Image 1 (cartoon, rainbow, N blue to C red):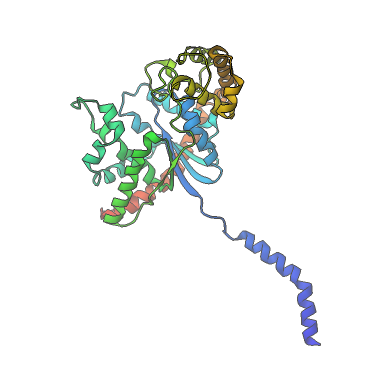
Image 2 (cartoon, helix red, strand yellow; image 1 turned 120 degrees about the vertical axis):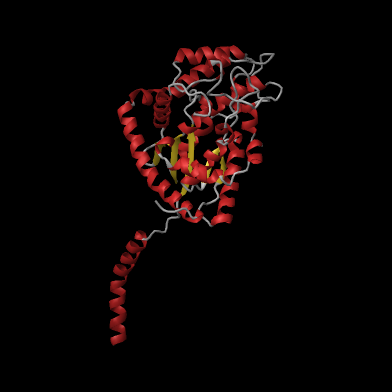
Length: 357
């Protein structure tokens, strides 16, 4: 009798126990830890369509499932000849926000507002080797044959980049192929520091961005579209008005013939096709079919119209951003970034045996 009664009570109470168990289980932190992402743009030149398609658009997507840190890396701009640097920093921050980077989901800040970038740079510089820095492709390209005027800043640029990444203990670094070598050095420096002094830094994984490095200059399909190009006809700036977009696409270099096809023998029209495909979301083959027998003029006119409409929402968002509010977002981002940066440098100093202040 008692057994039967107990069974009956359990039967009646089971739904309650089950619901309570489910409720408590949903409260437990079973979700996997988010990956931490770091990336940034130096405020040199203008942010162009290639930057957006190859990098910033991917960053916007990464916000959904990762803990993201996006910086305006103004200290890197000092290795060139910065002009109106303060204004450029605000401009890049506005572009970030207009493109969809969300300060509610990402930490958006200015590199020089966090002094720990410079401190960790020096700590890493003590273990970086001159030959490995001299092997960097970008250093070779920018220094040229006569290196008597080359600065330490240019040579050590990748060490500062490593400090940027390791300061926030990034798990993932989204980069194009042109920056891959620098992130490989970051990985080497992280391993070297950890092996020599004790583990502080996770070794970040390189995340090759979708289509990164595929957008070439409108005036030279052999070189990447560049935000520091001498000619404004090299790139489409994200803030270019419609008439400028139409003029730049109209003047874009094409190949001999008039057939709109993706081919190694036709690098110029292939580049324009790649832009059309990325902006429209259509496969290149479908675009080729659309313009079969129509020639370059009609294709370029339609491409210009497509880009103008594509940029319209970004430009509208950009125009609505107020400098005061942007500065407030950057200050808040710096406060959040500083907490993590200070902790990382504290760990590194302890491993090195530096006397606490």
